[in-house]
Image (cartoon, rainbow, N blue to C red; front, side, top):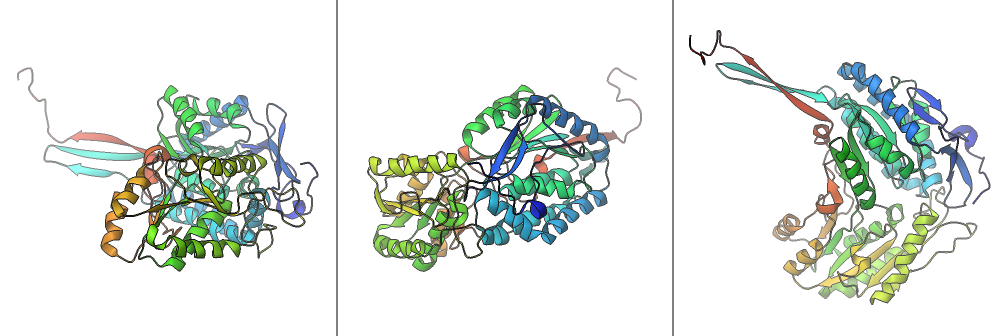
Length: 500
């Protein structure tokens, strides 16, 4: 790792980004920097600040100072800002897609047609919400009850490296619509698109309303979440990090929303459309290189159609073009970092040791012209038992485990036998069967006959250790507001408790 990659810098991004605090770009108190790299080439793209507790405190103080006026802002103002964010992102959609591709390694076309439209959608959807956040009244003959719905205050938001622009939009859009102020901490591995976004939006964000600090989690997390002026933490990422953040949040007893890992079941019944099911399973391997918390990485295939399904599954994956993620024809790029490559590789070694059969893939991929790239071959393990680590632990890579089953009760039992419950898929032509199985599966989202079939406005979130709270829907606004009950007495005089 080392050589700089200057070719895009002049037009797409800066050589260095500061913290964005109180409407200004500032250096870190530590004076140290972190490099953002291209995982396809190993080249240095840009540098960000290596923030620490002092930076977190400054950002929280700025957000706290901005809250009283932002809380009183008109819905029109909040709507205009969110719509303008959407408009500007759409106007530069190709640039932002390129930034995600360069820093994360995801294919350019995937960023163009998946990440950016979903991010833009969040701003547009919650722009309208600013007008519809209100309380209610309860009228009785003797009293009038007024329920006010109010913003919480300063929200700490921590987002991951796999789909950073989607995560950024899904966090800040509802929080801003509800009248909160924000301290956002993006991933120190992948955040180039996020930093460029705030550079472009700085002129429309009132000072202190959104603050962005960068750095390693252990240097920032505790100081940020335990600050007495922070009223909420929203996090998307790993379960171990969430456990620490929940402990930090307990210091001041602040609410949390947590969207964590997944090991989703993708169930293929014997009456399924096998072409569609095999395509859906292949998508779960390939989309964002498998670095997706909702990925259907446990494929449960009915024993009657196992061979036919596996033939189609492999045929799809053999067609996948690995290569330069910025090439519009590339379908799968490199893993986002060396750390992630090493983690996935350890599971590729573990699978055969646990008794699984490696059907295809299973090793680093060689891509011409990208010797330093973190590429891994699309991988399928068969003869997998549900209690194997490769079937229970989130690999977060292009790896699928195939498990066979005989009857519906058995597959539901195995699908639910996991600490996670985030996503899932079901492939069947039987409507009654589809209803019964989807109701029995303990998961926040389950797609029937088309995986990753996102419908705007539907909630996303987990069961069990996949987290709590919901995002991507109006429901999230309840996580960014609280209610205040005011009761106005309509009767005159004293009650007479102590006599007249």
